Length: 110
Length: 115
Image 1 (cartoon, rainbow over the protein chains, first blue to last red):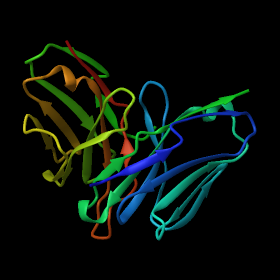
Image 2 (tube, rainbow over the protein chains, first blue to last red):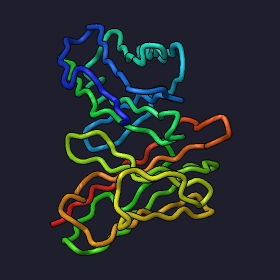
Image 3 (cartoon, chains in turn blue, cyan):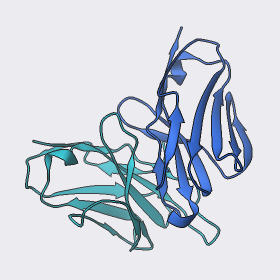
Image 4 (cartoon, rainbow over the protein chains, first blue to last red):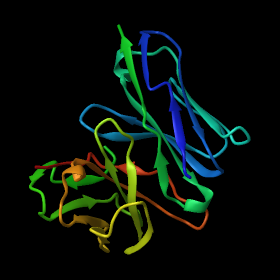
């Protein structure tokens, strides 16, 4: 069974806090996406990674293949970071088809 | 802006009707994937098209069908609409190679309501 789980489901933080969102998956993957979805539906791809770590501005994504776990970190959080963050995994035996977690709803309070 | 567009933005249909949703991929992308996102849920994979042929399908019945055209546009067709088909439908385009898929670029979605 393909399974992508995220935690927490909901997260409220004060502006400036360091935020971590976790994603775990059940079997080997070829790639993992971190996505951001704002109210209204638009989805933006933040990172795609298959190993190690990637950084873009205040966002950092890491993946541990052995532990089947990935994290998305936001440093110095800002109210404009408020969105739903979704991880999606392409499992080896599903080819290039991505399976999505249910998302983490982040609210950053000024 | 991802360069991926979808139409229409919103659509209201009644149960039993048929609907066609459209997606224009980013230029140069050979792969388009369609997803259904119910309220409060993560997107669910419907199917993927690669070079105009279906390249994988999720757990959706045959009344969900698709097409991909040489000009990078694609369609999602749903026949015999059911109330549970009400959702946000997202398409994502990417470039698939023998090594694997590149980053997926999502369109803004079509919100379908079935009454």
